[in-house]
Amino acid sequence: MPFVGRERELLHLTALLARPPAVVLIDGEAGVGKTRLLRELAVPALAGNCHPMRFPFGPIVEALRNATLPIALNPVTGALRPLLPEFAHQLPLDPPPVQDAQVERHRLFRAVLSLLGSLAPVTLVLEDVHWIDPDTRELLAFLSRCLPDGVNLLLTYRPEDTCYPVAALRSHLPPHIRHAQISLAPLDAEETALLAKHLLTDPPDLWPLTLGVPFAIEELARMLAEGRGCGTPPAVRDAVLLKIEALPVAARRMVQAAAVLDQPASERSLVTVAGVPPEQGERGLAEAVRRGLLHQAAPGRYGLRQPLARQAVYDSITPGIRRRLHRRVETPAEPRGAVSPREEQVIKLAAQGLTNREIAESLFLSPRTVEVHVANALRKLGLTSRRQLPRSTT
Ligand SMILES: Nc1ncnc2c1ncn2[C@@H]1O[C@H](COP(=O)(O)OP(=O)(O)OP(=O)(O)O)[C@@H](O)[C@H]1O
Ligand SMILES: [Mg+2]
Image 1: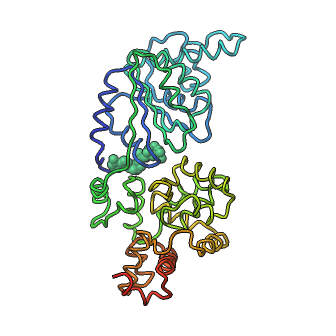
Image 2 (image 1 turned 90 degrees about the vertical axis):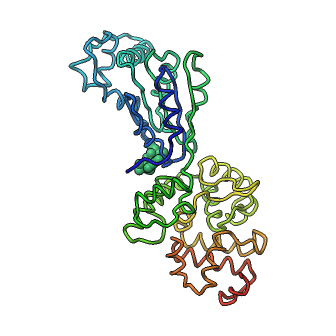
Image 3 (image 1 turned 180 degrees about the vertical axis):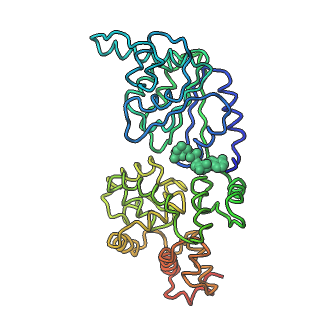
């Protein structure tokens, strides 16, 4: 698939990596294109991924396993034999064991350092360090303090999932090692249209639903290409649901309340609709914002950032909980008449005589979601039937 945009980031990254030693951190939300950007780089690299299972030294083993080892290696690299049995015939003999575990560990770290030095020029790429294991984390702290000439370190991570203090790594770097942070934003509307054009013959505007996240654009385009016109693409839905499931209950209820309200709402409104005690709601809101599920759309008002995510959350709420959340909206949490932009879109079409199914198809929503939007909008406008709509919305 053609690569879209990112010219500035690619140039910056290439320039940084051309003069090792450098440490580069790339952050961006899930699916924004961190891995894809790296795939466009034309520099020698060894890449390993961190996994949620957090295997000890997992990403380092994965990266080094792809190396082509030089003939002459420092004897200390023999300490890598237990981690890299694939290279048993190429690595020097394992050095004699020592009693002290910390000495063994230091030897192992020196072995990685020495092996990387012998592979220079090279960039060690560790992806998704929000899932870094404690051993690799310690090794990185060691490596970054004495990065050999000719070796770069490049780490990617999702800020919303990170508990790995990348700031600490940066602050401990010796002054001679250059470092940079590249934050990847979603594609803009024009780039989104360009990517959509590569994926579909006559694409609709995918920006409003995807907000420029390439993963969401690809998945939505795939769904449209297969003729499945409405709803959330399964891969996007699954990613959102995994995040929701990982939240404490109060945070989850706050996110569900935001999905039901479908417009940025105050903390008080969210707490009311979520039906949680205010202190738990406050903590839940902070957690949901930290995990990137909710964002502050306007001062003091929070909502789900991506329409596709909102729909996935809404559709995932079990009927009983959904009824309860809606009942709490009945006592208007938001001022009457505050019709959300999405509700506005829906009732405009309803006013033109479109059925819920037709509206759903034209806006890539599920009919159930449209039904809720129509009901909410009517209530906010003080109307009792959609037949009253044309006069009130024009
Ligand atoms: N600039 C781009 N042009 C075209 N396609 C892109 C671009 N950026 C990303 N993509 C595509 O979008 C999808 C998601 O991108 P990618 O896997 O790089 O995201 P990521 O930021 O690494 O996500 P994660 O945090 O889940 O690892 C991939 O299929 C990728 O090829
Ligand atoms: Mg990635």
